[in-house]
Amino acid sequence: MTKDEIKIKLREMLSEIVEMDINEIKDDDNFFDNLSFTSITVVQLFVSCQDEFGISMQENVNLKDNITLNYIADLIAEKLDEKEKGEV
Image 1 (cartoon, helix red, strand yellow):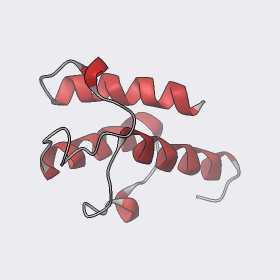
Image 2 (cartoon, rainbow, N blue to C red):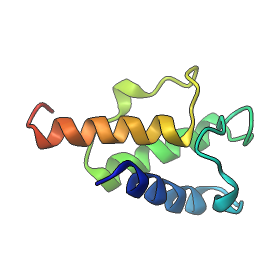
Image 3 (cartoon, rainbow, N blue to C red):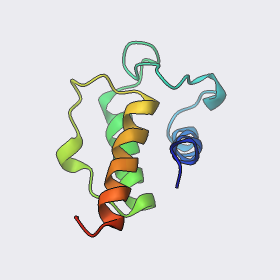
Image 4 (cartoon, helix red, strand yellow):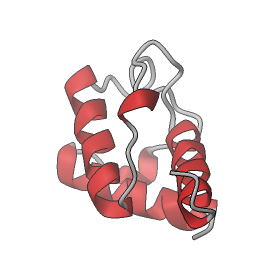
């Protein structure tokens, strides 16, 4: 799965969590500063990602990080790569 495919899926998941036009979410918008998401929204997205992609992200949840669509897509791509290589 490519990073672009992951970002499309992330936008779909966000559309189920928040009430906003997901096409307005830019790849590098900070979820807290630019989009005014709450920590609960981000945790819901991380849980959805774990369910959707079959990966564990709990050790990667640090709400002090600059959480963006690119940030999460990179984490997922890394985890999927590790899973594919049998490192998880």
